[in-house]
Length: 159
Image 1: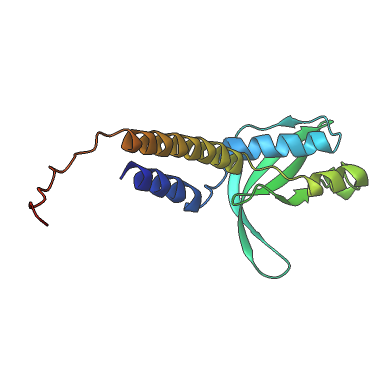
Image 2 (image 1 turned 135 degrees about the horizontal axis):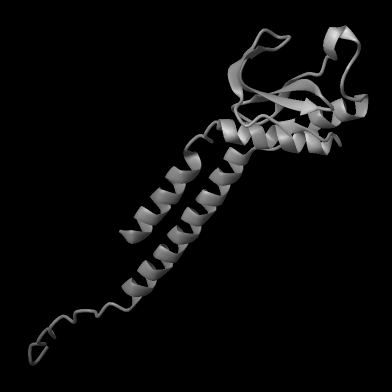
């Protein structure tokens, strides 16, 4: 029975959906993405929430993370479901170009990070290891259980 419970627990853990990013996760993703682009930024720890509509018309729930770069504000919109930066607003004040270089924009757009998924995987690995240990202990315990002997069946004489 312990083996079945262990397998069911591990299966249940892996079949659950990955949770959405928290606001703190989004801040970490934006900070890492900006750093990957070589951008020295001060990231606001309190992002806003919103919806980004893709060019295909699909709505994506996002965290809108603001960051100060050389006195200007940029916004990195991070998808709640997978941690991808889906929109970057780096327009300079007054429409005088962009705050970030093309290489920085490209690196930020290519950045992939999902702290919620990472926690999910770590937790599920721990559950799986615990389930395997529990199953091994259950099998070992079952193998060492005393067996009941049946009383000998008398053999009739002359047979």
